[in-house]
Image (tube, rainbow, N blue to C red; front, side, top):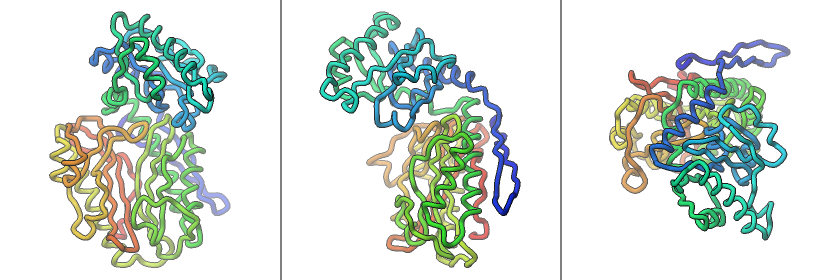
Length: 415
């Protein structure tokens, strides 16, 4: 149930820290049907015949199915047609149809017709025409007189082929983002399980953090834990140490971590059920006490996350949050991240809430709603400095205020 936490138990054997992750029970077929029902509500409100999704995370939201997720992010190898009214047709990678049998929201499984150049070579146009004819037939069969279809990702040749058959295309990413922006009760369970896996990986990272380990070796602890406990992938490689913590957005390397180094990371983890845990922490390696400069950076980052979390109240506007958000003083302000917070579910999702100084050029307004799940973050590093602290907390918005989901402790001794 929402509010409960996934369980971790511990044993020790031959000096190694081991654990057994016990996830909260989750009725995945029920979750599949609840997400599909919400998506169809959005389709109906938009007065569409249906939608075609290629993005693997959107296919999963619509159907509950998963197959070659990372490969599918850069190869349009599978897709789904979701009519507003009618049976959902999943077009699966050829030979993989048996992998997705039994999903309650999928009425029919057909082999996909790929038309990306790697597969088709110069026959792209030919294959796109065959693909479009099959989609148009489904639109005619289940859409009645309505010919408007939402599509999330489509190569130009596919767009032209659908338009040639009289199909009007609209933006599917905006549509499915509307469905995803608040989380269903079963999604909250899935998110808590993903966070539990992420936090167990963080515990193992902390146990492995000794001077002499490389950044990459330390980062591998999180990957290994995620895969072992049913997770799927990690979206970035954001772990750095010592002088590589500033500026942010450097990826992990073969650098050997030294005694007294600051180590900062951002999990960006896609865990069990395909849901994400996006948590950031900064630690001190070894036994050397933290310096006053390291403590100052940590205190500022902690203050920013703590104070900005409290702004996420039901009904608050994104602009209001931007205007009220706590920001560090100069010179640290120059290196802060543009974002105050972002939504999260299967991956990073709507909304993205920017600082006031970025709002006029890149921000957008909206309102905080109950059961949004967001990540509130901070990066503090002085321009030209030798260290930076990254902290991030994952929260759920409730009628009573923000509920902290990411319970891995902060480094209180650095405060």
